[in-house]
Image (cartoon, rainbow, N blue to C red; front, side, top):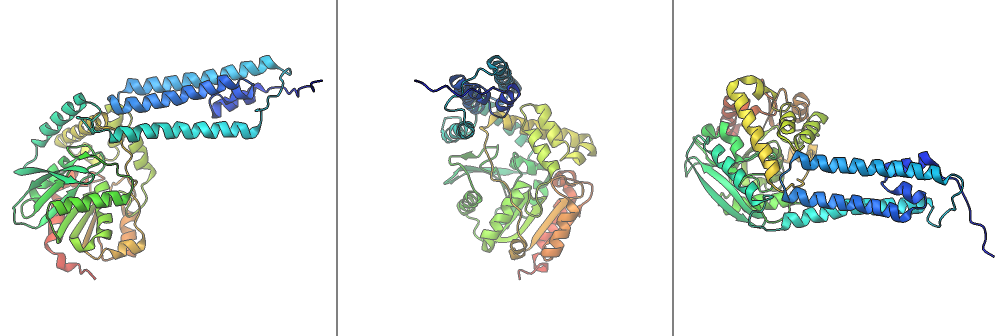
Length: 432
């Protein structure tokens, strides 16, 4: 004789809540194991399809809207169907062998891992896929972006030559200006920018220096990566190989803006013997953690439309927009450049910048100039300078008035002069 099965009433609100926290879990709770697994598999398939599309198609708003609407529709169906089914079952539900808390947790964790792992595997494959148009999403995207880039490059105000430098991480594009026999000055731009961001500064900097404006290999621009950069040491190896191939030897001067400032500080920690002077312009993290204002702007700016790119950049470059008509025109052009870059290139996860410890800041023995705009949004300019003066007073730290994260542009003349004065008088800052 078969024993009576244990019967336990299903709770509609609980089943809907389970589907809210994990799609399909309410169905499993109601005994519909296959339906629950199908819903979870459907979500996994959708995420994988989206991962493929973002690497193959332009980052258009309609694609994102379709994915968001599809997800909401599936989620609502899962919750409503689970709620209705629970009410229908009432008290007449025979407990299944898998109606256990540990099983619910197990299924949720397994699919959560798959939902993260599968798109990441697709992303890794797509980044390593060496198509004729790599690192762009398509041949059309490549043509459109490079046409815009080359038109923008016509604003470069001094004579220059271009070199494509081979490294183990791919080919790096470098725009070289200034006297051949002058001291070397390497320029590292910020994230999601290119060497063209130095247009307001390059004429002054190239008068007495041989400038090397780099298109960072993992950013938009003309550089082409062939290996994924996962950790800080990857960037450092790439930079070391680049400087070696450029045959700059020691005695290098380096300026880094934002993310490029963080890279410059990291390179200075690892290879102090190669650098004569470094200039850090509002370096990302490095001195203080990135604040919520910057993170909010960064998240907004990656949304798939020029409107969001502009809304993300505006708070960071407020002073440039307010300066004059020429400033607004340049700011709008940068929005176009960044928007086109985000839509044209395969998306990549960059290494997060870190804050240097007191010991690391003190270990920078070469002369260091730090400049931060008074209206900086990535962190407090006052707190950043106060920390430097407290823990590493030999670093020359200054606040630039009437500027934020746009300080090398909105106050180009002032910043250029301070850089040149600093580079021309390094003996005033002893190395030990």
